[in-house]
Length: 187
Image 1 (cartoon, rainbow, N blue to C red):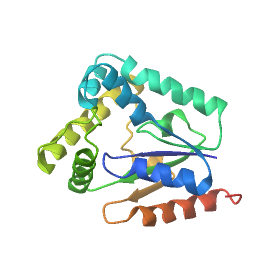
Image 2 (image 1 turned 60 degrees about the horizontal axis):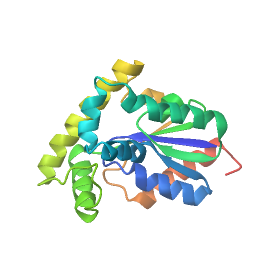
Image 3 (image 1 turned 180 degrees about the horizontal axis):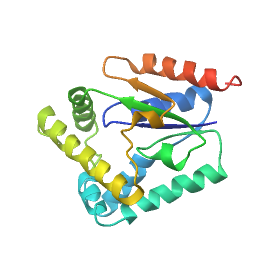
Image 4 (image 1 turned 180 degrees about the vertical axis):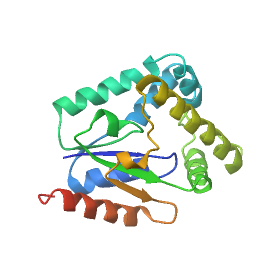
């Protein structure tokens, strides 16, 4: 079983990936973490790296090739990535939405609690975080359309769409596990 988690910034993809992996005893991968390391290695924030990606395909292509290879060589994992649903079509595809303000609040809080994460800017306010995240979303939409001709925001591409705005991680996990079990009785 392969589960792909896509969704908006601050929706809880990483938290849910970890919880799903633990609950179902799956390996876990994060494309966002991989791209964040690529940005850090170049002394860039993720947003600067995304901007570079608007003209340089390697910023996406390297991790996307990794996802494709992963889907061909492994099974029994969960991965969070904005495009895993596209590169791993045999997966259970889940999209997590969140109110932009709530997502920005979560990211702002997380960044201030984890000051060593250098790929994410140290925001001065939730409003600043929300504005930067909005531009990040626009860059992602542009890049994915340019390089792959896909729109990850099209909810019809997913098997399950949830909104985490007013749900706890445990509530979200329960909904996901119920759905996954409905698809795979062996879980």
